[in-house]
Image (cartoon, rainbow, N blue to C red; front, side, top):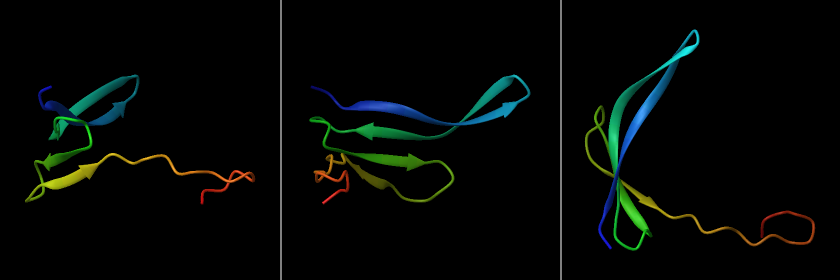
Length: 63
């Protein structure tokens, strides 16, 4: 399995039209457990991790 790269865009609505501006790239590493976010307007890189679902109790509240 190879890394997957996504383009990150900001959506801006003007009337009925939507315009998209590229703001970065998201690279998901092999195995889909983590990745890196590169934002064009900020220095550095940001780590991203999969968020596992929380267990819920009988009342619907997360434990």
